Amino acid sequence: NLFNISKKISIPEILMSRSLFAVSLIVIIASSAIAEQIVPIPSGPMGHSKGSDTPTFHIEGFFDLFDDKSYNAWTNLQASLNNFNIDNNSTLRFTFHGFALSRNRHSYLAAQGLQVISDFLINKNDIWT
Image (cartoon, rainbow, N blue to C red):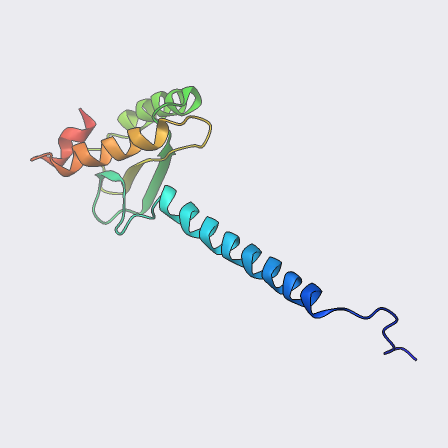
């Protein structure tokens, strides 16, 4: 018969397995709650835009302020944006996002710092200077 159980399980074994399951479940829930608090999701759109308010093309760049590759990409992209005269171009908009990569532990603080600085600027275009 398929449903015959050859080994009898005692009450303490059942309680122990349920306790282990409950403890495991609590640990998983607690660790996911802690993980959510490490890097919060922003409540509004992040980034700093330059160019047209009604663009045909919108380029968005995500840059880590501590990463050499991001710095090199930003240098090249900045030269290209200057060639397109981004300040007076009616068809192009560029948005810079401070984005923290996980390989540098200070990247997230730098991205937060960039946002704090931009929040307190009187002229929002000063972020580009």
